[in-house]
Structure formats: C-alpha cells, structure tokens
Length: 68
Image (tube, rainbow, N blue to C red; front, side, top):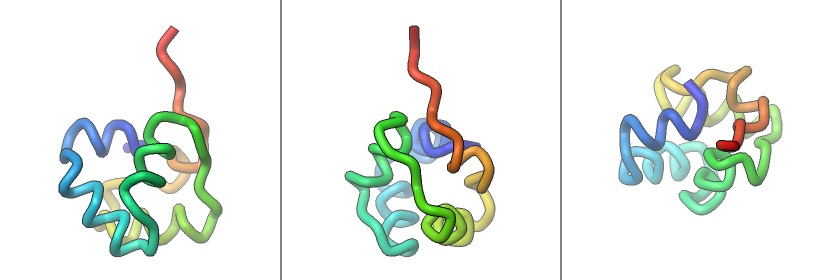
C-alpha cells in the first residue's frame, strides 16, 4: 500500500510511529501521503522496514495521485 492508504487504514498514531522508526517525522510522512513529496530510495526502504512490510516500496516512490 502507499502512504495515503497506510494513513487512512492505520491512522496518524501508527504513521507517526513508522515515521519515527524510519528516521523522519509525521509531517514529512503526511507530505508523502498527499503527493507533495517523494521519498529517497533509502527512506522508502526504511519506511517499508519500519511498517513491517505493510508499505510497498514501489508505491512509495510513485507520486500519489490527487483527486480530480
């Protein structure tokens, strides 16, 4: 799943935990979720590991689609 799906499914508290474990913060995670930023390859790998594989590496690297 991508960051937006993760945030919607697991909520802010879990997103904050995953962000902290991966060396970033919730504000940056939120920017990833809403397509304002893209993670580096290194950060995407750390986010996947911190989420126990719930986040998808490829989906994290793709820009989140915005609603029309």
